[in-house]
Length: 373
Image 1 (cartoon, rainbow, N blue to C red):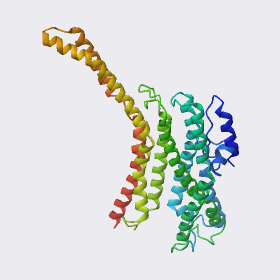
Image 2 (cartoon, one colour; image 1 turned 180 degrees about the vertical axis):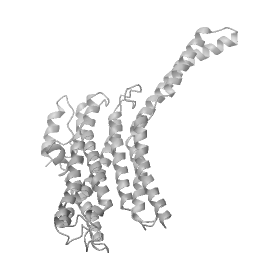
Image 3 (cartoon, rainbow, N blue to C red; image 1 turned 90 degrees about the vertical axis):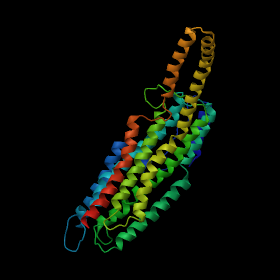
Image 4 (tube, one colour; image 1 turned 45 degrees about the horizontal axis):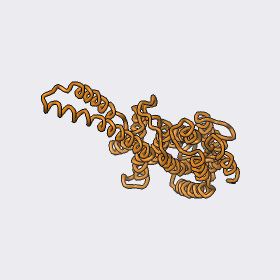
């Protein structure tokens, strides 16, 4: 229940440390992996690889559906989509999910502890406590579970009523039962992370309601806001991974105007949008800081400029004013080069690649299909 976190918050209001936000305390999957078993992103990805790829292969082998045989149209080893989904997409999604929860679990505390967010501790703790409650609201988890069950149920129904006798069809033994049992986990975890990503994006904007210490020359290349940038990159990569998964579900003969293609393209568009929206408040704060610096330089330059103009009008050299203007001009040029987005080259490349990969795969599928026809 929520009484324990509230008690922690009550104790932390008078303390000197920010409240500890735990975004996956009520998530039965990630809470088990991260909080109970202490697995990191790499360990979680390996476990999901074993459970989904290894487990499905082993159970289908027990059922006699792992390899081709008479009466079976598609064995497990022939299911290319299953191998890509369970061997690549699901483990990568688990890695990104655990990375996201680890980042969120420390970022908002560190923003205060490192002096980036300059807010009264009690007020900031109330914000963190509310954020903790939103992450762990029972209604969110129940609603996501219902949505995941509906989507997964539709896909299972579609698979059972197609004309292909596959390894995951009902009546194919323990392998099909195992797939039916574990198959809902990725859908539930993915939808839940998307919901919590929305909560996180709103919290990242809320942080800038307080004064924020922008450091233009910080070694992270992001104005001292790399913690927020890393969360945005994780969300963008996860969205791109979902787009890639949707592309894999687009089979030969699927029309360009269809739900799978529309979903894949929507997720591709959503990737840069989500990244930019999460960092928009940081961009505005950095832009304001830059504008304030430019205004100060302009104010300092104005007296020297007037002195120079008056001296030239009188036929004087006004060397002191000239030197001051040249110095301030160099400072003005330096300030104008300061970034107004908390990103660097590495971050830009990651986001661009996350957009390009699913788009390139979709285009390749269309080209190959047209070439075969």
